[in-house]
Image 1: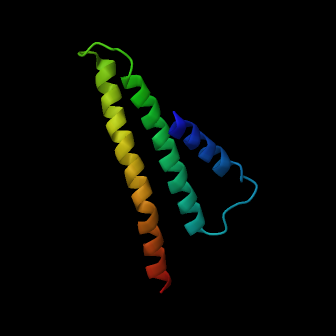
Image 2 (image 1 turned 120 degrees about the vertical axis):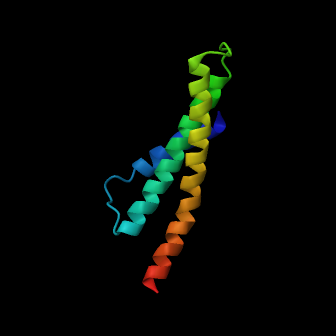
Length: 95
C-alpha cells in the first residue's frame, strides 16, 4: 500500500513541472522512463491487491490478474534497468 501511494506521489511530482519543457531529448527520455516505471508499478500494485481477493481457481479474472502482475513487474524492472543504459548510450555518443 505504501509503494502504491509513493508511486502516485512520484507521478504527481513529475507531472507538476508541466510549465517547464525539457531542454533536450535526453531529459525528455529520462522523464518518460521514470514515469513509465511509476505507472507500471501502480498497475502491479493494483493487480497484486486484486490477487488477494478470493476468486475461484478456474476464473478467467484470476488468470488475467496473474498475467498482469507478472507483465507489469517485468515492465517495471525493464524500465528501471533501461534508465542507466540510456545514460551510458548518451555518454558514448557524446564522446
